[in-house]
Length: 64
Image 1 (tube, helix red, strand yellow):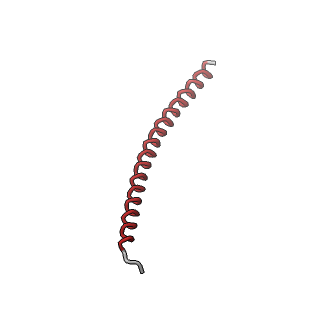
Image 2 (cartoon, rainbow, N blue to C red):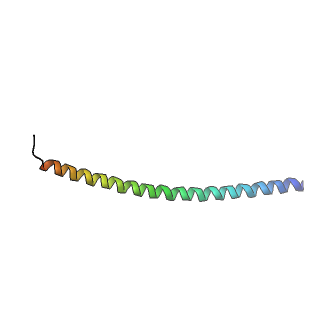
């Protein structure tokens, strides 16, 4: 009986450690996603800016 309780206690401790590990990994992934979303927005802004400049240049070109 005592051995069963000890085994259960060890399994619970392993489970709690695993949960803590998953929480830390989840937080790291959330931070990474936030950084990638910010980078993506910067790239979208650059593309929009480049598109606007190209459209402005195209308007100054003589028509064929």
